[in-house]
Image (tube, rainbow, N blue to C red; front, side):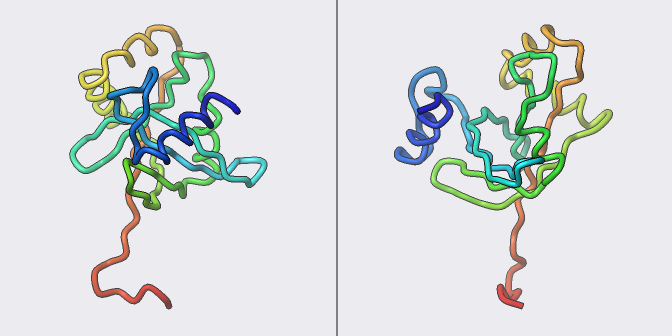
Length: 143
């Protein structure tokens, strides 16, 4: 079993709580559709709240390339998010320009380790806003 799969299993078995290196941190599960394979892929990611929005950062620990999950959501922005015991569909929207800069600085204030990742790479580390999809109140669910 891969490390990610063991974290995913622990997350789902314990209502979003995990031990090890993620203990006490804000962790979510992001399910994307593979850009090439078309198969679902789930990854555990740290996140930061910005008001009601959830932000994930494609840092890959400061690696020179963006992580696979980021390439997947660029191809297929419809994603599934699990936070605690809540599961919802969302659209993954990469922040651009000044908004990305502002959100990345917010992330660094909340989780200073991301500044270390930024220092390790020449690429602009993407910040992705997970925008929850909701059914409007009173709208029929089946059309």
